[in-house]
Image 1 (cartoon, rainbow, N blue to C red):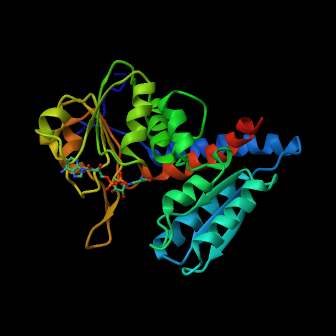
Image 2: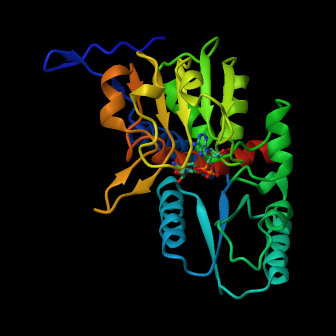
Image 3: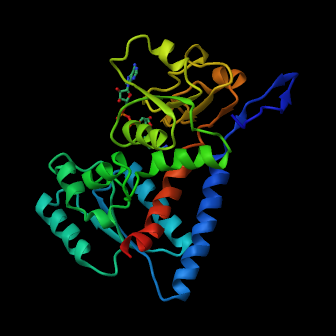
Length: 294
Ligand code: NAD
């Protein structure tokens, strides 16, 4: 492990705090330069963003994605559809966008209202415009090591590790969670980076025994402050994917940061860890769509 926790606070070593805000800003600035280069060569990148209904959380996420596009120089097309739009109408819009040469990426903000089949919607997006990386073809490509879009949160975790000089190769990597959007794809990516990967889930026996083996522990369990120091090996690297809001409206993760930080070598905070990386990697996917198109 390259990380050394040399900082001290009141006589104790402190963990290296993996700064997702800083790393995501670096990525966005690199992309901004790349987009400016493309523009000089007459190439414009366009992302179509579709929101169905007006769920407040979705509105915030969509707004942040559009802001990031603006910052980087990506054109965003906004489709705000009524909550009661039919599944057919949504599929028709996606098919129209699939056929448009000026549209590089299509993003449908999830979750969708119950009367719409999310899997069908994802499957309808052309794989070469699937910047969220959720299409079965993108997931299949990831699992057999072929080129394709990688879903944004897991791709962001790899960037956090690499840009913090944390080696993955040969390390014991344990992932808690097996969801399609985080647990499974991050496990495949860690494997691609030559980690030795174990996936834990709600039926795993002796969870603590398994997680304590981890050099790198990735937590995507969806339960506030679930992981305490009893789950963590001393000196491990801990990546916290969870996002929760407590009663005082404060954000926290799946890891009990205050309890775990004193014994680990590196850890992501919440907020400011994995969270900001998701949008940065969405922007990365939009920009790389130009290469993929070629
Ligand atoms: P999910 O609910 O789909 O999956 C949770 C996983 O945890 C499941 O696979 C389940 O088997 C496992 N699990 C549940 N209880 C367990 C237990 N007691 N022991 C072991 N495993 C258990 O969640 P998700 O969509 O993967 O999201 C996980 C967390 O990450 C959530 O807090 C979510 O809000 C957050 N998230 C953050 C981002 C981001 O951009 N930072 C993106 C996606 C999700």
